[in-house]
Length: 114
Image (tube, rainbow, N blue to C red):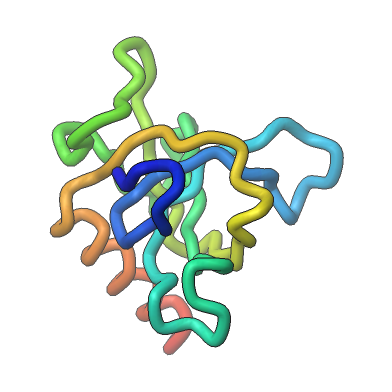
């Protein structure tokens, strides 16, 4: 995970509001891209993380490099994409392994191309 004053990179996980659920608590987001967007380091393309074991979700498990909650299992929903603005990030959480982040990006692309 990057220093809070540095931009987030692919594989970083942070807390930010859910743009699909107004008035709810922030949720975890996995950064897939940011550097090459029209507003680099101000916006990030992310996929949602959840504690729900739903069909199509991928368990993060041992792919957590830092920030794993010891009592909860986290999953990634690669079809739940959002552009998150840097100013809305509430808190950094951790980082996942590069291969996991790459796999989630590839799955998101599969959904977009279907």
